[in-house]
Amino acid sequence: MRVSLDDIPASVCEKVGVAVYIAQRLESALVCHLLVRRNQTASCITPEMIEAIEDELERMTLGQLVRALNIETGTDASAENTLTRALQYRNHIAHSFFKSFDSVEEPARRVVLMLNRLELMILEMRSAVGLMQHWTEALAFSLKVDIEAIRRDYDNRLSLLSLG
Image 1 (tube, one colour):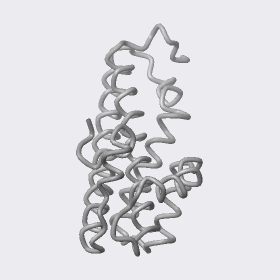
Image 2 (spheres, one colour; image 1 turned 45 degrees about the vertical axis):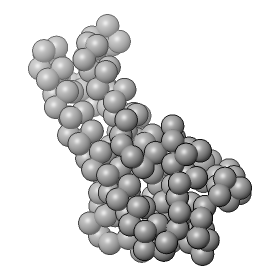
Image 3 (tube, helix red, strand yellow; image 1 turned 60 degrees about the vertical axis):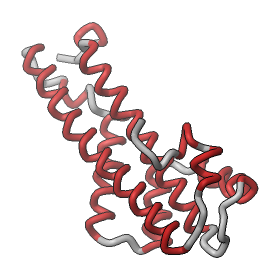
């Protein structure tokens, strides 16, 4: 039985929205980290430095950002697994989440399964965002790089302060 839009309650749509939002936060956190890494010889990241790199980074997909980070940093296995799982979850939500429940006949059971899976994916993606936020702040601190320009000028997209 194919899941139709009429079969999807608002609670599931809301959780999908949260998951998509967190995936976007992960993209922003990865862009922010790569901005710091690519400007690590500067004592302060200026809006001009951000502009010089942002066009390239903002055109990259989440998968390309994860691969770029792995290439540039040689991330440890645990961090790489966290980021890879987050990427897989984002791709699942974007490409096959609803289709994966076509075989569940009972509507109430389908909703419970959808919500449970979304909760797991959201938790994992939040973990990946937290990892990148912590890692970026630690990198900036260790390099003595001022990242206030990122916080100030890109707070809506690249905030390191919270999931908002």
